[in-house]
Image 1: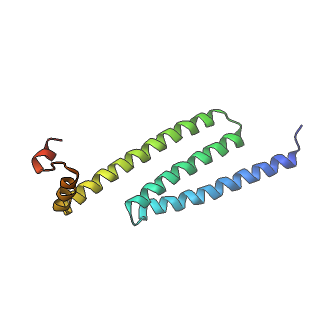
Image 2 (image 1 turned 45 degrees about the horizontal axis):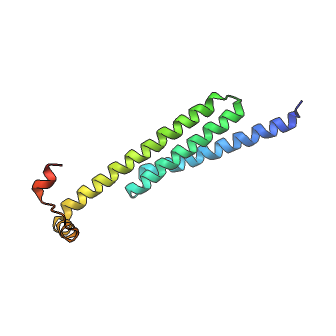
Image 3 (image 1 turned 180 degrees about the vertical axis):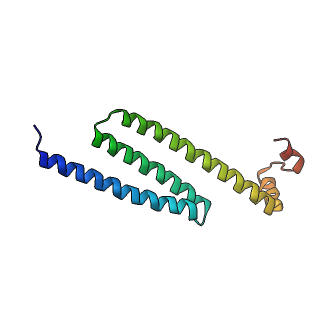
Length: 125
């Protein structure tokens, strides 16, 4: 049989790790809300997803529940897709904003590449 002192120490370490991760999760949430730039918010959201995955994995070990590992894997895929979607949206909004602020610069760059970027061609896309 296993030593009850070791089981108690293991339980204390896992609970302490969960509490530490909860504090980190709160800090990431604050960064996601207050972050000065959108990129900071996206990175904070990605980090929050990773921290939650680690917390679910620790709970799976602590509670001896194998199904939590499956939930952790599913959560990892959903978190990854969410960050990809947020990044694509951010890049598209950034490009549109840049086009509105500097349309002449965009046409010069496109002309240097040999592309025709007129307003009529962009409306068709």
